[in-house]
Amino acid sequence: MWNPRVESLDKESIGHLQLKRLRESLKRAYENIQFYNSALRARGLAPDDIKTLDDLKRLPMISKDDLRKNYPYGLLAVPREECVRVHASSGTTGKPTLVLYTSEDIRNWSEIMCRCLFMSGLRRGDVFQVTPGYGLFTGGLGFHYGGEAIGAMVVPTGTGNTERQIRLMQDLGTTMIAGIASYALHMAEVASEMGIDVRRDLKARKGIFGAEAWSDSMMKKISELWEMDCHDIYGMSEMYGPGVGCSCSRGEGLHIWEDHFIVEVVDPSTDEPLEPEEEGEVVLTSLTKTAMPMLRFRTRDISRILDVRSCDCGRTHKRIARVKGRCDDAFSINGVKVFPGQVEYVLMKHPEVGMNYQLVVEKVGALDQLTVMVEADPSKIGPQAQSLESALFRELRSVLGFQPKVRVLPPMSIERREGKAKRVLDLRK
Ligand SMILES: [Zn+2]
Image 1: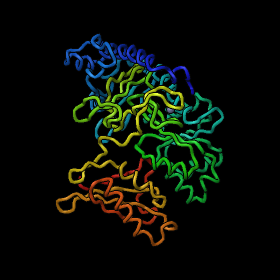
Image 2 (image 1 turned 135 degrees about the horizontal axis):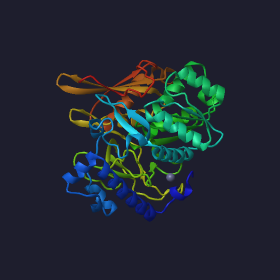
Image 3 (image 1 turned 90 degrees about the vertical axis):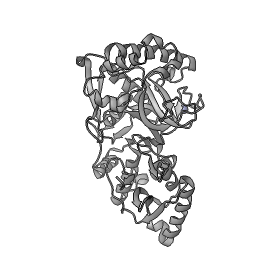
Image 4 (image 1 turned 180 degrees about the horizontal axis):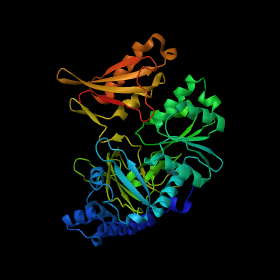
């Protein structure tokens, strides 16, 4: 462990620390930020009313939309002059959401990144290639500072230019990569076009991936393709960036750093907190952020808190299941809710299914129609495309509860992008 004392802290001590830090954060937010002050007063609450961790659920929640409304400096709890960094997340519409950091925030972020990277196998001496974007996006710099603090040699390639990424991996002997999961698949595909076998010709055997929902079967696929030990990292710019939690090698799910965050899962329609193992929206409260404390931030991510405490790895921090999708990603087919992850889970179980797939949603007459397009390796399926189609059809029908169309296509027929894969094409909009 990077920080064994804290990472294996007993449950009671974590609770005490959380309550103390929650009360401090709340007080700072109430006294310095108009948004929190008004939201608490509207509920007839003052910071002293929060006496136990259970009182957390009495606090109002904050959404990404509130961040937009308070753009750029409306949610600062410190004078602007005390901020040393700004990041932003791009919104699909309108203003970006801005996140500001004091130097203490940057130190805390680096600490949790070190814990995640160490958990994923990064050590001094490693050659660590950081493929998420640098700049206003938190991905690149988050991995960068964590990697340097551990003492690895960071290769700050950032996103894109996949051929150059692969050449550098080969020339420098990259041992670990950070990125988004679908990009690891894309890189393997490009490498093979360049005549490079990622297992034989490259040394990258460790990977840490985040920023998009991915399934267990996709992780298995990357592990096999790259012969790689893969870890899942969780985070978002509103909570520093990546580093809120990470999957260990021993147990299921991701440990959330409870000395820095409180994790809740709520029913997105009623906002009521759910019990462990019940699936809903992840809500995070920051405990150490000084520039922009975030109390009960709605992440829109769908997951559940695991009903287990101890883990064979020795870490005591609570775990959540791998994020299944985002509330906003789910789409409805004639009233039935579909998460792209459900489809991916079925597809990735078939080794002959290629790395790219797309879900096309359209209106056929008055009804919604889902077509699942997959690419398959011709050397593996030959004339068997028909039987692959019917196998996928049967399995998808049983998982989804309705009949999708399935089309098996030759490799490279679905459009590629360098960033996050566009998995859903909704032509109804
Ligand atoms: Zn563990």
